[in-house]
Length: 241
Length: 237
Image (cartoon, rainbow over all chains, first blue to last red; front, side, top):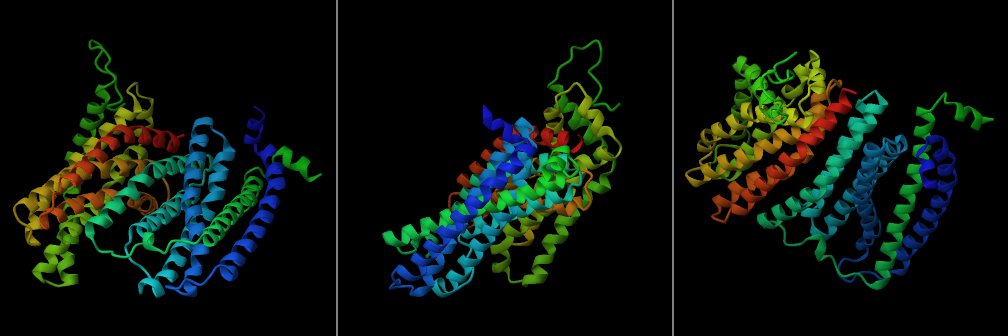
């Protein structure tokens, strides 16, 4: 298989350099379209007024926050089973983006909750599990940064991401059941008004924009990581010429 | 060479599965020689639990309402404090490297160390919990469910904690880092453990929560020895 050759940093570095501008353009275009549809074209919600428009940012960032952790778990499996350095570098490049999306998701959720539910924060199942997800990201970043030996940091991070991925469904269901058992909430995020087709399209386009942004940014970051780790490698010297 | 690293006597046939018991027995022997250290975790639990009435007031209904959560959070924190004991001393004096070289499978040795850790921390915590429950006004069935939930849940805390302890071996600021790694993973155990006691207090069927704790215990027993073994190999590479 030809694709295996991209497991080598020297092959992946130029590939990432060619790919990331494409995704950056896709992200910019989709974001412009999505925001225009969401902020100007989509009708005002008769119950919530203009404030509901924050979901066009909220939904996509939340999805990406969850999705990126799964991608990290996948790279973790690759890193441990094939011992590929580039997989671990990708995990390290993805983690800050995932944490950022999760944090934005929580923040926009809180800002939406204040006028709609009357409070910034409720211990709703989704919000709680998203918060725990943010903790998982923080733990991953803290561990990989605390270990000075890069090889050990890579593998420890990979193992932690796999353990975290196994735990995500457990955490999600435990929090959901905890919430229904405690009977505290009457309004949940699922009770949000049904989206009109146009709104659904705008949300989907925004989610795709977040996805393309995540790819572009993590590729740029992985290039920086490669430069940092491979500084002094022969192939980099040749590349400079 | 340590007792656990030594192959079974030459006249006996080598049995890999004995690794669990040899590792557990060795850690128990070492642990029981410093009983003061074991008592510290228990005292920590008692003190943390005693802080809550001082902080929230002595209203008996409020205290009873928060009792399951308080005892469970305190138990979780005192398990967290004892996690470095599982590997740190063995790592410092090089025993851990010998254990990695021993003919016994590493997952079994890791499993034995987790068993020993639970016997010296989780189990005593569970057994002292009824006294704390009484102070908060729990009674009868509530105390029984509190103990059972702790007996089922604290082994899971030892298992998840051992992964965190193995990953952070020898790092600067390892204890705070370990808390960051381990506490989010502890949350499901906390939810079902405290939830079971909550439910018996409001006369709802609590069996589901205990079953879920049991399921986590089985899953942990199955998976955690391998995860810990992998983490040890990474940290000692």
